[in-house]
Image 1 (cartoon, rainbow, N blue to C red):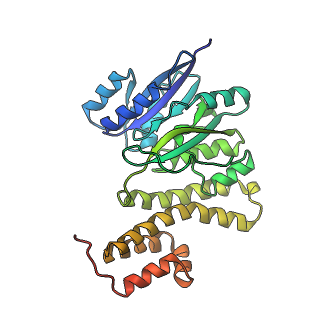
Image 2 (image 1 turned 180 degrees about the horizontal axis):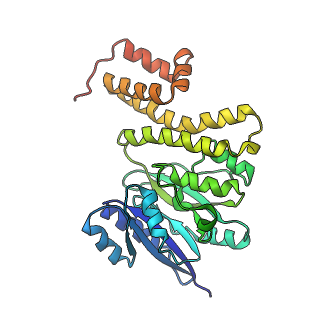
Image 3 (image 1 turned 135 degrees about the vertical axis):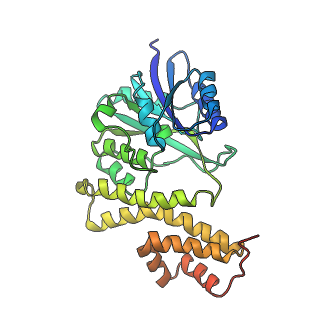
Length: 316
């Protein structure tokens, strides 16, 4: 039996306890048929990170700069496997990860990468919801259209040939949030990205309201990435309306996040917090915000409750 070698890239920033969980889950996937080269791109400062890397026999690479892209790119320079996979330091792999992707790439030598399904989990890694995407997203232009319509394949489910980085380049280190979506879109637009319907990882979701600033930044990033690839892929759109709908669907993901925050603030009678969430929507997604204010919508109901004078307990 030929033992295949995968280089697994894990960016990290001063979270050694979470990193230990992530690395253990990767080592659990190894077997007689599969060898894993662990490479950690560290843009943090904690000595404990080095200790965790040594514990799991991982290559520790210092990354000069901030962000997951910088960490991934620094680690990629040390990859020697035929294939490359990824995992963020706060997520974990499932034991069935990687082998279905390997089988897909073996069966499709013209493809450069493939992704699978993620499962959302709470901060304690208790899974909830069904694996996604549930339905096959298609191939070629259909996949590009799905991705430009709000499908963000989890980077921890991706397996790529190492040669893919020579074709499509590294992660864009200027982008902070969404850089993995941007990189996968490059492959999808070349019709070289595939899909396997296999649950591959648990995606740890942060507590609601704990990453508002990050989500605001991701709105701007998502808009930039959509326009970067959407305007270069005009052939995939079946009509101008299709393009507009894709743009709306990408931003709707973030819109729903801040609507949920506003709903929670109203329910907790935190009036100024609710106003703050609506202010974020007005500033970053003005067209969606104005449209929902003038038609029957949840935003309009929430706004009316705030205007009527929901008591404010924001400081409690």
